[in-house]
Image (cartoon, rainbow, N blue to C red):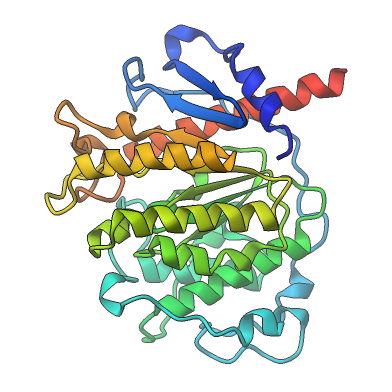
Length: 359
């Protein structure tokens, strides 16, 4: 995997940021394993503080305009995509995609914070961004007001999958020389505020509310033609809500890793720990056990594991009340913590690239 061992070696030297202002990043480098990221909670600063400076990289706009690939987008993806234009490739429009149990999805649930929009508004904001040749994680502020629609259509899992496929196809066509990261997962990833994503790269959000590890596995092909620097995967909490066994969750993660390694051999694959909850039906002891197994699978498959679980726990091992809105989803403060973890990874990758360019 590209630069994984260089990344691990560089991390051992520490971050070029005052230690007093940041939690310690402890590294456990294993034989034949790129890196285990163990982000400790003890010295984590107050969430309200400015945790880490943005990584500013000169990033041009899309090297190729997206508009030519976004012709005749429907008002909802339930409608048949127009046969004209490359965006209507049979790869997506004719692909049979089976949805998990309907009861496990809540497409129009309230957002994680009052500053965010509803699920339906988010959907149309993203769809309308595509119509004008943009990706929603990079749209101008005035474009965010486009997330409105008079449609009474009840959004489905299929609608969201098709939208994510269209976004991935647009990125694949228009990425050019831009650097790209991908978030893969469920509602925790889907609701990651675009403005909180680390700067300096394009971001493709492939999260769907209510999705499971098996659902994630089935739609990895959506972005198989993109060229990500890093792919961040977080999945499993909805499996636990739906009564899926630990063995199935772990087996799906192995398959996710193998699929990603095959389709993205040059990308850094990072499996993220499942976060704790405040829901009695999902024991946090079970989540911790699964996370231990995920770390072992990452070692076995020679990919990276990012452990941020303890950052989100209180003294009893539950999800901190100030980091959640409902005991499961994250608040704005919760995303600040997650953003800090991603920023650490991005900072070290940038530092590694700078060092190599000087050689």
